[in-house]
Length: 266
Length: 244
Image (cartoon, rainbow over all chains, first blue to last red; front, side):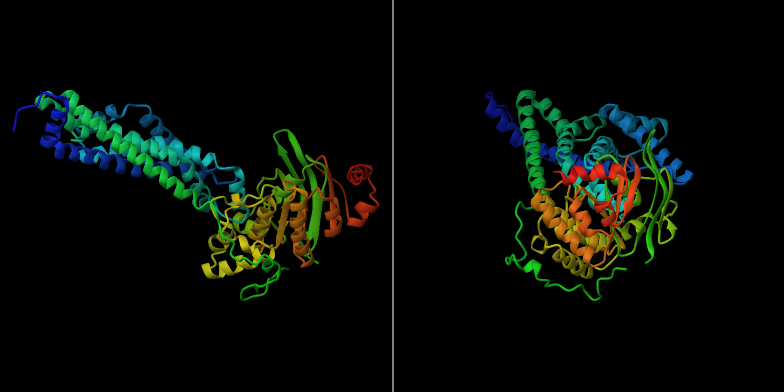
C-alpha cells in the first residue's frame, strides 16, 4: 500500500512501517557518535584538566617550568577555540575546509568522531579542572603527608573524588552530544536528523515525521540521564557498613601482632 | 641521644607578614616535644614547614643532618615524617582500611597482603579495627582522628607531627584521641605536638616550646615551663588556661 492515510495516527503508522528501520538506523548512528564522542572527549578533558592543575613551584628547574607553562598555553588556546566557535562551523571548517586548504581528506566518519570528541574535550577540560579545584586542599595535604607524589595524589585521591562530583556534568555532555550530533548532517553524516529530513520530504509529512523523531530523541536522552543517575548512586557506595567484629571489647585486647618483624622505632 | 630533627634560623613570610622569625630548636629521637601558644603565634606554620607543606623563606631544617629544604627527595622525606592534621584529612573516597593501606602499597611499595596485615595492626592499636569497612564520612571526629593516626603510624615514620589533633573535637573525643597519643609517647615514638591541651602537654612531653608572635618565647622541660616559667608572657599565657 502506497497511499498516504489522511489522519495523524494513520500517517505515523505509515511512516513507521515504511521508514521505521531507516529511522532506527539513524538513531543508532546518532547514539554511537554521541557515546564515542563523549567517552573520548572525557578522556581528553581529564588529560587537559589534570595538566592545567599541575602546580609550578619556583624550586623546579627552569626547563620544566617553561615546558609546563608552554603546554598549558597551548591547551588554553585549544579550549578557547573549540568552546568559542559553533560545532557546525567547526564541522564545515574541518571536513571541507581542510580538504581544500591542506589537502587533508578525512573520511566523513573520522571527521564526525573527531569533531564531537574534540568539542566535548574542550568543555570537559574546564569541568575536570573545576572538579579538581572543588576537592578540599586537605585531601592533597593528607596525600602529600604520607609521601605521595603529585601524580599519585591525583590518581588515587583527587580524581576519584572529582569524578564523582562531575558525573552530573558528564551526563549533561552526553545528552548535549546526543542532540548536537544533528549538526553533523551538514557534512553528510546520515544520523537521525538527516534521516528525518529525507523521510519528511518524501511524502511531505513534516509534522508526523518530526513527531516521531522528537520522541526518539527524548527516549534516548531520558534513558541515559536515568542510567547515569544509577551510576552516580553506585559511585556513592553503600550507605551502611558492617562492623568487622561484633565484640566491641575485642579491639582493646591486642589480638593482632605486628606482621613478621617487630614494630621498630628508633 | 641523637637529634633527629634540627631547625636552624627558620623564618617564614607570607608576603610582608613574617609569621616565623629565626626559629631554632631540635628534637631528640624518642622525645615528645609539645609546642604551645595562642592562635596565630605560628605553631601550625612551623609544623607545616617541617613537613614541607609550607616552604620556609630562609633557614634550614635538618633531618638526620641533611637539609631537607634543598633536598630533592621530598616525597621519601615526607613518608618518614608522619603528619596528623586538625581536620583529619582522611581520603573521602576510601574506607578506613584503604586509607591506611594506600601509603604502604603505593609509596612504600609493599605487597598487598603485608600492607593489609600492617594496617590492621595499627588500626587495632588505635581501637578502630571494627570500623575497617566504614567510609570517613560515617565516622565521628574522634574516630576519624584515630584512623588518621593509624594511617600515619602505618608508614612507620621516624617522627610524628601532630597539628592540633584535638582542636576540632568535643571533650569526650579529645579524651579518646589523647589516650592514643599518650600510649605512643610511652612506647617511645618521637613526636612533635602542637596543642592547646595544657594538662596533656605537661603529662606527655619531655620538652615544651612556648611560641608567641612567631618566635620561641620560652622553652624547657615541662616542669620548668608549667611550674616555674621565667618569662612574663609565658606566665600570662598559662595563667589564662589554669584560670578556666
